[in-house]
Length: 329
Image (tube, rainbow, N blue to C red; front, side, top):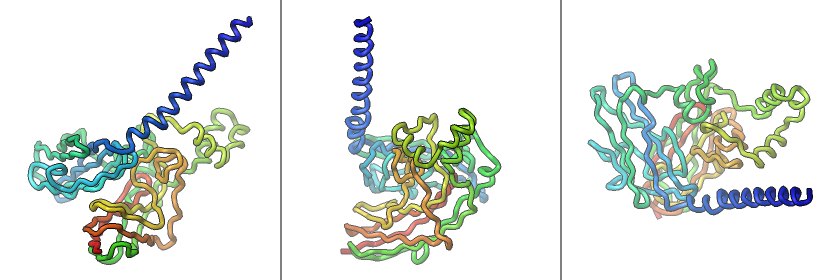
């Protein structure tokens, strides 16, 4: 009996030790490995038709880094072919997965040709191939599903009736400012209020009542959900996103340290629990101004020409706006 107990303790100790080592490597060594120095994978997301008979090819990317935001100007390491090398693609790449970042319009007679986006970042060349194959046809439900607004393979009358928000950047589309000089951006966002903002407490209580009855549901609070997610982040078969309207400003083109005040929610899939991103499980949608007008102050630390990108996202669908800022010494 004594030997059996000892063997049991020994086995348990080994399991705990192995789990601790795995946690250290997964959260430390492995995470550091991917902070910088990795490549950027261009992604073809699909196509959708336009009313005039033309088509839009939709692109995104996967920046393999968690922290590094590479800059790669249009040229030999960032180009489209055939035709114009510059098709409006980003030259500044935010971390991790960025879906449906931009679109390229092709004529109605495009046929079965391919449009190829080539990227070479940190010495690794990758290509994305866009075609009009029927399997790549995209609609609003596909976008909402792919970005995580919907559960895998699900839909609802609410999601089917959702229309994208509309972002309108107020003032000139080209601005001039000096290094270190604050520039205020006024942005109006209009939305239909769909999809309904995700209510973590209500959803978790419904599940708890289904599994454990009313008594189990009574113990569900925002704090209890937060504690559980901090200890055991959810495991998903597809990317998950919290629905809620937000505005995000980021650099689309331009190399330099650009800061936005107040800090805005991330438009990229930062799945870490406490990330300021709708893909992070503790994210809460920011308050929406009653008049729909957002004020953001931006400053630049280096001269140059920058393209800034505004994205309004309601959880399921999005809309983009851009301004160019010429920054002098």
